[in-house]
Length: 292
Image 1 (spheres, rainbow, N blue to C red):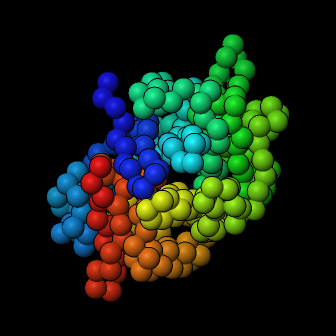
Image 2: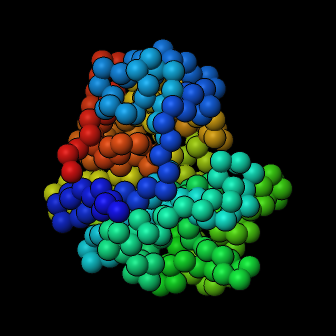
Image 3: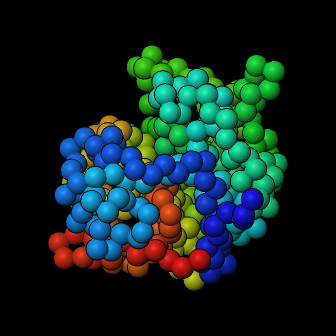
């Protein structure tokens, strides 16, 4: 097994722990209002492997990020997890070597100090727990797990749990029962130059994570966007956006702000090369990966 990809930004490292990467996904599967033309607008700058040559399909990745920052080991958005009972058929009952990938970057589950969730969809919380003799137990026993209050209220609502009871019952409730969860605000200061930035629209309490390193600022997007072609087509909603209009405004404001600031961003679902910068490209934007 090769070591997971790692980028160094000042005194901070960010490592991609990939659960799955799927090529040739029809763009309409995640973007019902999109077409190949929307993806084609990004093809002149889109890195190889991120989309098919005709723009009809994209590559989609499920990954978590490990941050080593200020002596802390922080896990961001721990994927789907194994053996979960989920309504999404392609995420139900997985059996993948994600923990082996985590260990390959030198991190044991007990080493994790903090687990951060940008939001509480099932593909961002799953490895928080693992099943032992029929019981869902915390995977990272020494870590505090952060939940934005508005997001936790949404994820635990009767409506959400009626739609799919698995995510809360299997991945969130065991953490709360174990006393490892902390409810925080959408602008929470995590200390050591880390803070949440409210980026709602995909879900009601969605946040991105900003990390001020010794060199420059890094921002982990969460599901503010899912694929780099959205820089060229920021108006296109993703199928999971709970408030498409708000998500659209949030994306555009985020793109403009971070193109100005020059911050490094890490796209939670970006395939191939998920870490880079946002650059202005005419009336829209583009993505330029950062070398490892």
